[in-house]
Image (cartoon, rainbow, N blue to C red):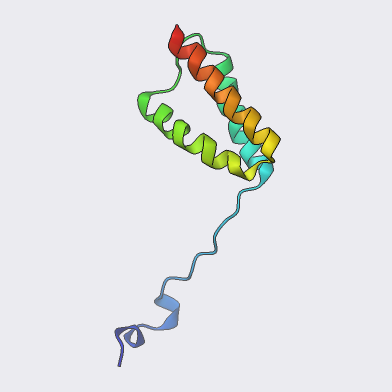
Length: 86
Protein backbone atom coordinates (compact mmCIF):
# COMPACT_ATOMS: atom_id res chain seq x y z
CA UNK A 1 0.00 0.00 0.00
CA UNK A 2 1.42 3.41 -0.93
CA UNK A 3 1.11 6.36 1.39
CA UNK A 4 -1.07 8.21 -1.12
CA UNK A 5 -3.71 5.54 -0.73
CA UNK A 6 -4.10 6.63 2.90
CA UNK A 7 -5.53 9.98 1.81
CA UNK A 8 -8.80 10.42 -0.05
CA UNK A 9 -8.55 12.03 -3.50
CA UNK A 10 -10.39 15.15 -2.29
CA UNK A 11 -7.60 16.08 0.12
CA UNK A 12 -4.78 15.69 -2.39
CA UNK A 13 -3.56 18.91 -3.98
CA UNK A 14 -4.90 19.44 -7.46
CA UNK A 15 -2.41 19.87 -10.26
CA UNK A 16 -2.29 23.54 -11.02
CA UNK A 17 -2.79 24.45 -14.63
CA UNK A 18 -0.04 26.75 -15.87
CA UNK A 19 -1.33 30.21 -16.55
CA UNK A 20 -0.34 32.02 -19.71
CA UNK A 21 -0.38 35.80 -19.41
CA UNK A 22 -2.29 37.74 -22.00
CA UNK A 23 -0.45 40.21 -24.18
CA UNK A 24 -2.82 42.91 -22.90
CA UNK A 25 -1.92 42.21 -19.25
CA UNK A 26 1.79 42.34 -20.07
CA UNK A 27 1.39 45.64 -21.91
CA UNK A 28 -0.56 47.04 -18.96
CA UNK A 29 2.18 46.07 -16.48
CA UNK A 30 4.87 47.64 -18.65
CA UNK A 31 2.79 50.77 -19.19
CA UNK A 32 2.32 51.13 -15.43
CA UNK A 33 6.05 50.74 -14.86
CA UNK A 34 6.97 53.13 -17.66
CA UNK A 35 4.48 55.76 -16.47
CA UNK A 36 6.21 55.66 -13.10
CA UNK A 37 9.64 55.98 -14.70
CA UNK A 38 8.60 58.71 -17.17
CA UNK A 39 7.30 60.97 -14.40
CA UNK A 40 10.38 60.55 -12.21
CA UNK A 41 13.32 62.92 -11.93
CA UNK A 42 15.19 60.50 -9.69
CA UNK A 43 15.03 56.70 -9.59
CA UNK A 44 11.58 55.85 -8.15
CA UNK A 45 12.36 52.15 -7.76
CA UNK A 46 13.96 50.67 -4.67
CA UNK A 47 17.05 48.54 -5.18
CA UNK A 48 14.88 45.44 -4.82
CA UNK A 49 12.32 46.67 -7.38
CA UNK A 50 15.08 47.65 -9.78
CA UNK A 51 16.67 44.21 -9.50
CA UNK A 52 13.26 42.58 -10.04
CA UNK A 53 12.41 44.62 -13.14
CA UNK A 54 15.91 44.25 -14.56
CA UNK A 55 15.39 40.48 -14.62
CA UNK A 56 11.66 40.40 -15.39
CA UNK A 57 11.56 42.93 -18.24
CA UNK A 58 13.53 40.87 -20.79
CA UNK A 59 11.75 37.67 -19.73
CA UNK A 60 8.22 39.07 -19.66
CA UNK A 61 8.72 40.88 -22.96
CA UNK A 62 9.25 37.48 -24.63
CA UNK A 63 5.45 37.19 -24.74
CA UNK A 64 5.25 40.28 -26.97
CA UNK A 65 5.83 40.45 -30.74
CA UNK A 66 9.57 40.79 -31.54
CA UNK A 67 9.45 44.46 -32.58
CA UNK A 68 7.45 45.39 -29.49
CA UNK A 69 9.83 43.39 -27.29
CA UNK A 70 12.78 45.35 -28.65
CA UNK A 71 10.96 48.65 -28.06
CA UNK A 72 10.03 47.72 -24.48
CA UNK A 73 13.58 46.66 -23.61
CA UNK A 74 15.04 49.78 -25.23
CA UNK A 75 12.64 52.06 -23.37
CA UNK A 76 13.43 50.37 -20.05
CA UNK A 77 17.17 50.71 -20.63
CA UNK A 78 16.71 54.33 -21.67
CA UNK A 79 14.88 55.15 -18.45
CA UNK A 80 17.59 53.43 -16.40
CA UNK A 81 20.33 55.40 -18.13
CA UNK A 82 18.47 58.69 -17.69
CA UNK A 83 17.59 58.13 -14.04
CA UNK A 84 20.95 56.72 -13.00
CA UNK A 85 22.83 59.55 -14.74
CA UNK A 86 21.18 62.19 -12.57
